[in-house]
Image (cartoon, rainbow, N blue to C red; front, side):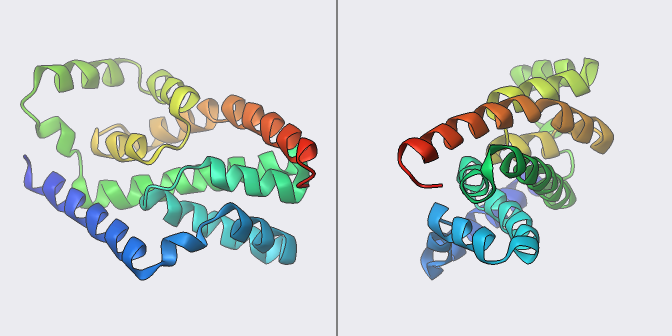
Length: 184
């Protein structure tokens, strides 16, 4: 295993353990995020985006953030807030992981890895957009793309193109769920 990849994995495991053992991870709950957004409309959005970015690094699913925004602001503005925060979160994760691990996946001597990276090289924006459609902001996807050597502009464009549809569908779902359960 390449040294930078090993260091990146150790960093992520240490960060996850730190948040888990300190109890900070429990603060990243739907209730906490919802209250944050309701109590502090403007400052809450900035904190929301920062928490989304940090949550992405420590393996929190993005739907928690999306549900909190939809319940606080409704499906349209909650969706917009989530789209912006998710994009910033993906960029933050990309930057941190790329800085630490570089393009470590390219150094793996594995036929399957070379084949996957070949597809990514041939159609970087389309691949990232498709992966975003399927997996949205799933942290391991962010790590893998950051370590893949894909250019930042292709990563950003694919993320911007791939996130709107799944976010819109989740917004409709959480809006419906919130109304059905009288949460919003």
